[in-house]
Length: 156
Image (cartoon, rainbow, N blue to C red):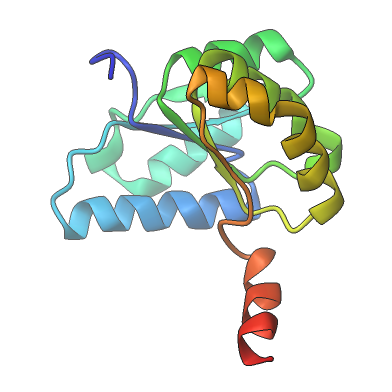
């Protein structure tokens, strides 16, 4: 891995779920003395700054990356800065494809918490060969939206 790259970026960090993920990551790093290099990203510098400040002075070095889902160049620049992106920006059918495309083109790993099965199917059909070629690992359903379905199947 490029030593100048962040280990991961939480995209959509100022959203409701993004804040939960960001706070959980910060807590994990504190409790386990982890020296993970990570950043927060989204559209609003004001909201991201407030989130960063809420984490405390220990996380003052966490970078803020501005990226809008409707601006592919910003998404590509964000992908250039990390090896992994956690996306909480939904609905994914409206805002997710441009980030998947950027990750696949850059070889950046990606995970989300989507429960939008039709969209996921479309993304797999459209981007799997290119993701395999670039080395990007695209993982859907890593959280909230997928848990009820997973638990339902488990209990069946």
